[in-house]
Image (cartoon, rainbow, N blue to C red; front, side, top):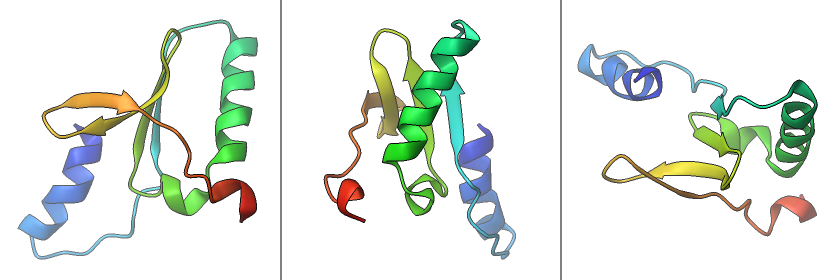
Length: 84
């Protein structure tokens, strides 16, 4: 809800806001697992790609991102990330 509000409400009021830095949703697992997952994810994704984005890490399915119809699909970093 917060993500959608950030993207839609400013336009409704004739405002422009800077992009939000990104939202990460994480399943509840031991801290060591979360640290490993976050370090790997943030190492693979450039901050520009996180801006205005929302990503969910599911302990069984890995990283996911929203698609139309309130569904989530697997997220794979673009192949050019490693080269940048």
